[in-house]
Structure formats: C-alpha cells, structure tokens
Image (tube, rainbow, N blue to C red; front, side, top):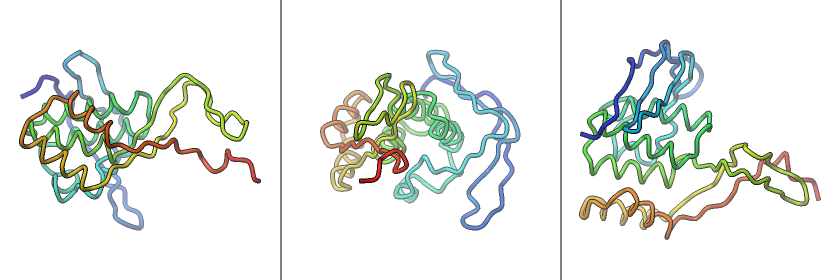
Length: 193
C-alpha cells in the first residue's frame, strides 16, 4: 500500500435536483495527506459529483461513489473544480489517494492514466495568453485544456500498464506522445468578426 492517509470521514448529503441526482454536499471537512505531507483539504459545504472520473470509464473502474477509490474521487473532484493546483499534481494526488484507499497498484495506474487523458485538465502558467489581440486569460488563472486520445491508443496504454507495470513517469511519457492538447478559449472572450 502506498503512503498517504485520509483525515476525517466522507459525510455527505445528497442534493436532489432534476436529472441524475449525482451531486453530494460534504457535511464535514475531509482531507488527504500525501507522502510529502501536503494536505489536500476539502471543506465542509463542498459539492462533489464524481464528474472528474470520465463517464466512459465507470464500467471499467466501477460505479461512482462505490468501492476503494470513493474517498480519492471526493478529493479529486474538489480540486478539479477549484483548480488551485496544476491538473498534473491533482491527478497524481488521485493516484496516491487511490493507493491509500486500497486500490491495487495496476488499477490505480490505469485510473491515473484515464483521468490524466480524459479528465479535466488545465494549466496555471504565469504567462498571459492572448487571442485575437486581446488578453484572454490573466496571469495566474487556470487555463482549461481540451485533451484527448484515440480510444484504441488509450486501451493499448491500459493493456500495457497491466502487462508491464510502468512507473508514473513512463505512463506520463507514453501519454505525452499520443495526447492531443488544445487550449479552450471561452467564447465570451473572442471578439465578433
């Protein structure tokens, strides 16, 4: 089992609304503390919906909020919403939290690859990004990235993870060779032509 530990219990209230009723609100503070001692705090009142785990993979990894990755998904969801840390760090934390929650090494690596490729991605680069001559994003703000990979390429990666047990750095390198990345510019910032 990997290092790291959870602090507190996941205590939630389901939020009823039209649709899938996936939203839950944390009733108590919850946190994951990684091997380096970094706290990943989720405050009471945070709304969690499981959306940081791509829906395509619910059948591969199990239904939302069930099983040994449930607590990891709560912390991952929160940080995918607030985007106060780089997405790469958030996805790495998810891997560590999965391991701390009892997810097997190979399954945790496959889940890490899935969220790194198909989950929310963003950058916190310090540069100002411009589009059409306008400052589109201010320095220090999260810039959303549309990322994708052909499903055949991802399944090849997943099978390779299961066969060879690569390190996370090797998984990242394999993802980088196939990942398509495009900055997502909000429509309200692009001037009319």
